[in-house]
Length: 392
Image (cartoon, rainbow, N blue to C red; front, side, top):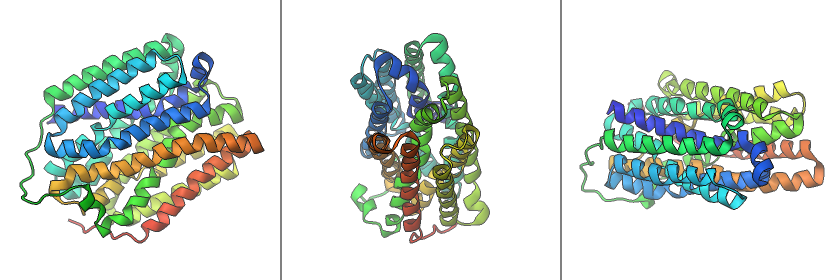
């Protein structure tokens, strides 16, 4: 199982990479095939929405056929196949289709790991294990920053995508060979996603799951590149460095959040405090949007650090999910988290373009970041009505 989890972690590195690399390629893609910020926002949105749409069938597949076949087949066909198509792209349409396929390919890999954790490890360890997987897998965020910028400038972005397709295919084959499926849950009780949606304990958790990942994924995965380029004139290499700094902050934040529920004996207040602090930092970015590139990068890094409560939120929800619905439960939460980002990517591109046309570049980015902050704050306040999980 160690080899299998290691390969699933490598697959998640790829998943983190593919959701974040567009920010670094923004300038070169616009120059080569004419995809500007709005077009890239749409392409990023296709990745997140296809990823989110797959969570329901992925949850069913995890419970019925297991993580081994679910993750390996989708990563091979969608991840490797989509990367090949991206490398051949000559228009925004091709990029959209490629990102949609890659989103499908990446959709099961983290949840396959979480399914194994939920089925084979004590509930009290779930948040720590989930955060560890997320933190280590977030190395993909780092690779999607300066290393990707270096590869694009050295080998070309097309050759880089073909190389990623080969890597994705090899990891998929490895998952098929080494991941071991947990024993099926012994239960005569039948259930579905509808049963989970009917659970009052989850109702106040869904909104924070919907908005928690929006600012981090939106800024790191897309907007940090156009923002630094448009407002401060940063180069591709400088954007890659800034993305690297934010990516490191995200990993550190994830690993710090992992054990805090056991340290403080609460998941609810760890999640609430972290998201409230993230909203405050976003407010600072709005106020100081053009006050210097060093401050801008520092605030983006702080957003990355405080905004990584994602695994703790899933752990909070996991405490209320019955074992026979473990796969569908964790994927339902992931649907909210990733689906929220996908919707916001579509909205953010059009919102930014509209505000920029009316009020200028700096105001457009301030308004965009303000939108992220308001949505996060709203979800955090609703989360106050949630019930803390019982401690094991």
